[in-house]
Image (tube, rainbow, N blue to C red):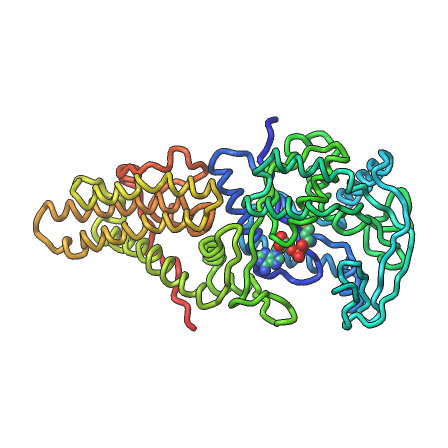
Length: 511
Ligand code: ME8
């Protein structure tokens, strides 16, 4: 079997409910996955949940339940988010699953056997007041900041992964693979980080402090550091060490947020893989963050936005559209409920929804509910066709370059041109004329709008899969499984097909 196009999201921490940052990352990855499927790739799409660690253990303790029980409830929420937002993931990995734990232990044992992991004393600092472990770098001007209160130095046995010896290899790798991190300015940040010498990575936590983790196979008194555990999900989910692994690995894309590029994904992960003799993923796609009305989203500020609530309000496809339309992949963006409602009303309701209703209305009234033949080819028709001819390939190119926001903008140039075409033609007025050519113009305009909607829905399929499928059905088009053969404006494509009943795709929202 040939290599599949393997794409992943980060696995979300199980220490809270999903927020719009999680939702955005899944939608972005889903848009890429759907776009690649339509382009002909055999896509394999993974998402999942990161369930181990101190915070999860503490939250479960606070709630008086076992960590596993707590994680099961959170997993249900995240899986529910995927289904609400129509995420087409093929698998959902949970780091407490046996298939994952086995691979983490196998990799740890391999690295230990190869001498890549060694035991030594870990020297650290602890703030009793903050109940927090500290490092030298937390000092300000050589002193511990006041908030930490009394800081104790301590030393305890631990296991270290020999990260530092791979620093030159990694720099070299990044220099010869200039496109490893998208966007490029993020790759520069990685190289900047690598100007400072790397320390070896402490990959163990003593069990007396942290129980909720994967025990080290060579010393059961310790559990594995969460990042080492979490990163391994990308290979454990696709059967590392089993037949078929090479059909998926190396991954084509790890989609992640900017906060987890350096050091976990751009430093620890390539080095872990290289040291274990496993190929490096092809690319990291790093998105920016959603802020809320200019502020960082946080539980403390109480401004966390629930994506399920948004989907209940405007529908999942409108949430997907908003995320993709508003975020320039790689940059940060600002979320506001007003902006979401404005896009819903203008782009979706006025531009796209109205076009569909007009078509269905007029189709029923003037054409017996069928897409008529186009018999007129005058300036308005030529202009509309030209807009599609000039822009369809551009949308795809923009999608290819992860410029999805621009791709949607371009698609809307076409959708608005189609509305303008109707304003110029005014079929509702022409229909009252006795002139036979005017009747032909009415029917022709219906054929042009049907073909325009077919193209629009095809282009919007990765972003709004449900609405697009609905539009295709309403204009009598077949469902779309590939771009190929479906992206050329050809006014006769739908001739004779039945139009659907009048439908409001984006109902008015009060408030
Ligand atoms: O980092 N806007 O989990 P996580 C956009 N478990 N994206 C955001 C965001 C925001 N406001 N807030 C978070 C973890 N994200 C680890 C990952 S992967 C092997 C382990 C993104 O739940 C964040 O950048 O804190 C990350 O990519 C993802 O949500 C999960 O974050």
